[in-house]
Image (cartoon, rainbow, N blue to C red):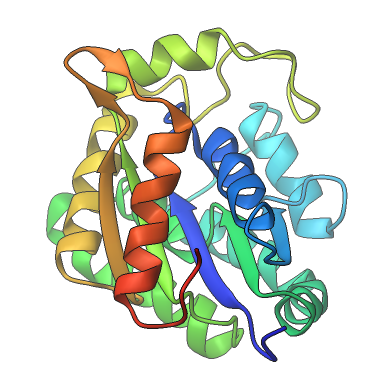
Length: 230
C-alpha cells in the first residue's frame, strides 16, 4: 500500500451525479485491489460547521448568509474533519472526495458580482489550502451536465438526511447554478488548485453509464504517472 494516497476530488454542480460516480469509482478501484476511502462534504452530522450549513441549506437562518461567511463555514467543516482526512490519506491507496475545495471556490464566487469573482476564488482557495492546510488533491474531476437536466435528477433523489426540501437553497437557484458552472469551467481551464479532467455526464441526450465515466477518471490518473491501476 502507498504511504500517501492519491487524492481525487469529484466536483460539479448539484445533480450531476457526484455521489454516484464517487462510489462507482471506489468500487472499480477496489476491484483492482486498491484500498479506497470515500469522504463526502459537508459533514452535516459530524462537525459544528456542518450543522450550521444544514440550517443554511434548509433556509432556516434568520439573517442572510454572505458568500464570505458561507465560505468560512464550508472551509471550517473540512478543517474540523481534517484529522479524519489525514488518517484516510495515510491508510489508503486512494481517497475520493465527493465535493472538496473547488466546490467552495466555485459556489461562493457565484454569489458575488462578476468583477469580484476572481478575487473571491483566490481568497477561498487560500483559506482552505493555506490557512487551514487542507491537503491538495492530485486530480479534480469536473462532471459536466446542463442545469435543466441536473435539476430533474435532483427532483428524483430519495429523501436526504440533511433536508426535507425537494431542492435546497443552492439547488433551487437556477441563476446560481448557471454561474456555478461558468466558475467550474474557469477553474478547470486555469488548472486552479491542481490538475483537472472534465467529463461530460451525458452524450447525445442520454446519461452515460457510470462505468464509462470511471474509466475516463482512471485513465487520467494513469496519465499523471502516479501508478498503474490495472
